[in-house]
Every structure is written in C-alpha cells, then in structure tokens.
Image (cartoon, rainbow, N blue to C red; front, side, top):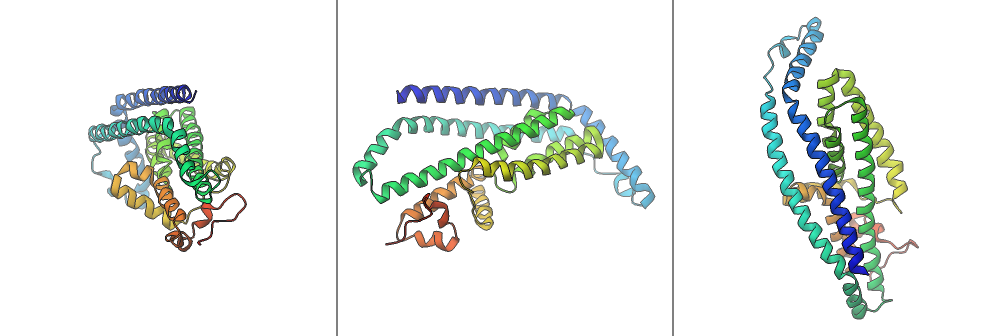
Length: 295
C-alpha cells in the first residue's frame, strides 16, 4: 500500500541520514582531538614560508605573523556545529512535513483532477512542471553525492584528517550554485597544507578542479533528462536573496525556491511574460519542445 511504501522509504532515509551524521561526528571528533598538532604544524609551515621568502627580502612579513590560536578555531567550530544542529532540526521538520505530504499526494491529485479534469491543459502543465522541479532536486542530490564520495574518498586515500566530514560538507554545500563547492574545498585544502605542505594543498586543488570538470559537466548532464540551464545572473541573485532571507538554508534551497516561483509565473497567463523576459520559459517546455503560449 501507499502508506507502507512511504513508511519504508522514510525509515530508510532516516537510517541513511543517521549513519552519515554518526560518521561525520566521529570524523569531527578526530579533527578536534588533533588541534594541538595542527597548531604545531601551522607554526612550522609559517617558518617554511619565511625561509622561502628570505632571499626576496620579504621574510619580515611572516617572521612575526599574528598568531592563530586553534582554540579560537575550536570555538568557531562549536558555534558552527550549533548552527548545523539547528539546520538538522529544521531538516527534520521538513522531513516530517514531506512524510505527511507524500501520504496526501494521491488525495491531492484526485482533487486537482476533479477540479480541472484529468486531461486539461492546466493539469498537464502543472504535473509536468512539478516533475521538472523534482527532477532537478533528484539530479542535484545524485551529483552532490557522487562529488562528495569521490572528494572524501580521495582525501581519505592521501591521509587528510576528517575526510568523511569534508566529503559530507561537499555534499551539503554543493546545493549552493557556483560558490558551494569552492567553500567546501577551502578547509580541506588548508588542512592538506598543514599536514603535507604546499604539495598536499596543490594535490587537493588539482582534484577539486578535476572533479568540478568531470562531475559538474558530463556526469551532471548524463544524470539530467535535460540541462537545467538558468541564466547565471538569476542564479546568483537567487543565492543572495534567499540567503539574506533564510540564511544558510535559503542558500542551499535557493534554486528550488526560485524554480517554484518561476513555475507559478509560467502557469499564470498574466505573469508568464516575466519568464519570457528572464529567458527561462524554455525550462518549462514540454517534451515536444512546445511551450504553452499565452491566450
């Protein structure tokens, strides 16, 4: 039955999420335990930089650098973990809401069909566009998962501490267009520099570039039934606006939120011109390539 299927899917999703959270927590604990060692490594790396710059006569710039107290870093990490906990609580309520929404889908579908008719243009357009938004979220999630697993696996292979945590961070921040993957890579690059020096940092940077080229282009295009192309200006504005309005959660969900608004414009004869002006009306065209023209 539908109820049993929803129960099974929800339980499986919760178990998977709980497993990732547990592994990430263990990875975070290992990083925190090694903070004193990171302090020593940081001082040693600065000494190496000072030695390299000495022949250029600019070693004084790093000979007495402002000290970086990793205790302060820990405090920042704790506050960040608190924010992450609040976000997980928010996502938990979203999951509960999604659970009940899944139970209501058959009834909602019947109501819409009774109101508009099974074969009406409005019903078909609505179903097609909702499917498009869902496809985007699914494809983005699959791509982020592949990216996070490959990045975390590489970090673990070369011995960077907290590899699981950095892979999870890549998976989560990958929902933020353009900026998310870069932000997620910065801590891993810094830690690779502390552990292995410049060669380690360069190796991680190289892998980040390769993964961006491979995962974000051919893999993403392969997983997508079509290319989810939106003008870059609209995407950046969406990230800024939803981030300002809802914080990190808004940045993560900026594209789905924007797609829902554009969907409502496309369904309205009076507002469809906005999508045409923005150049996004093609996103909601049917599979035959014909969009619903204004009446």
